Length: 109
Image (cartoon, rainbow, N blue to C red):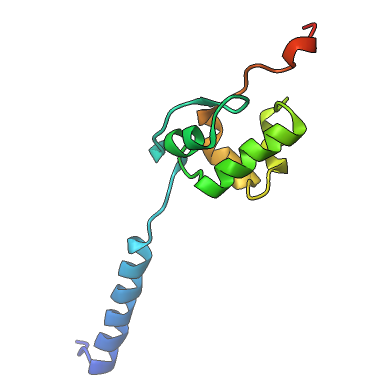
């Protein structure tokens, strides 16, 4: 028969504290994100922030500024050129992004 010592109780309590701390950290899964779809070529900074999860106001302004300087986005991956937008974020929010209005008046497509 084994007797539980004070030392083993201490280790066990530390283990449970660590286990609780790990489970208390919020985790964002793509399927848990809620929002609305926006057209990246026409959305305002406010529309990005209000409708696309994880998009901050600073990032939304960077997107609009980039679009105004470089023209309409031709592919969704072009968002990776925007300061603050990385591949991990794109994977999480791609379902909320729509690409319409490519080409402008000169388009013959």
